[in-house]
Amino acid sequence: MSPQEQSFYGQSATEAVSKGAVSTPAVGAISIEERQRIETLLTTVSPKSPVRGAVETLLADPTATVPLEPLYAVLRRPSWRRWREQQLAVWALARLAERNEQREKTVDAFAKVLSGDFSVQMLTGIGVVALVILVITIITWKKAGAFSAFLDVLATFSSFMSFKAAFANPVREEAAGALGKLRAVEALDSLVQAESGALMTLKRKMRETIFSLLPALTPDHYGKLQTRTLRLLAIMLENQTEEGNAHLILDALDKVGDRSVLPFLNRIARGKGRAGRLPSVRAAASQVIAHIEERLAKHKESDLLLRIASETSPSANLLRPSKHDSEEDIALLLRAAVQNQNDHQLVCSILDDLKRRGDRRAVPALHELLKLPELPPEVEAAARECLLTLQQNA
Image (cartoon, rainbow, N blue to C red; front, side, top):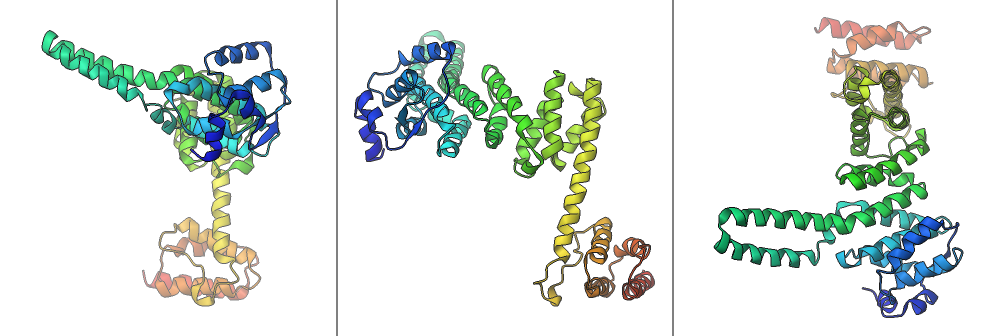
């Protein structure tokens, strides 16, 4: 703990609130239900807690300034003894994040709360409980026999895991709800991936937040979501029985989906899975597949254009078809070179390279190239010579 953090934890709540390292105005009214929920949580937290002091200040005046560092500090050190205090810290940070330069830091802190590391760290101290039960198990083994001892071990493991969930999940649920209120689209990776392994009560809250954020995605977010996130969204779509939610996911995949989601969408379009039983979802899935394939083709063409558009590359290192390119890639490369280069010497160099290497994959591409209208004479002559050479070497 830093000296600054130690000073917060060594002060009374009132002193801590008045000496924040970073302060910011809170915004927005607090509903009666929310106030009652937070006040109930406050009764379980020590009066000396700086988090409690900050929350009490916000309840009294939502526009007040409070220190941020003690709120971040309690989330950085998860503890099963302080989960209510951590829940209050999430609530307070969410209230403050709307108008403060620390919004990015706050969203990042909430994303870490959703990660598995948070619940694992909650196990600090719970191991003592497991050790005590293990001792009881050994005693039981001697008195009640092996089967009874086995049941005790099973109960120990179950209790151990439920302890972790019992203390971590309320904090995670608070964080998930806060990310939804903050419209934190940048946290979708954390939300979707955490949802896949969450218990049912927490899963419902996470899905509620996910569905509230999906409409905020735009084509500009393409390539920014992790592949695992896209696949999990596609799996979530497959299992959807609610038509509205299914269309929310489809609309999102229409904007940001890539090749990884196509197998799932194809199954849905063929009527597979729960979502595949919904006619409107099947039709929409087919449209999304077409849009994704069109987008992939455009990006593929853009990548190929980049390979021939570099003016800084010396002629000895011309960007040319590689051994991994398909026949379609070579055809696209040649067409793009003809249509986008004023100096057709580059096209002739590509053709000369294909001829020298005897690359017969280029034969279909050359046929296509020769069909292009208004093909420059020097390019047509080089293409015919290259085609003749490749056919003779067959």
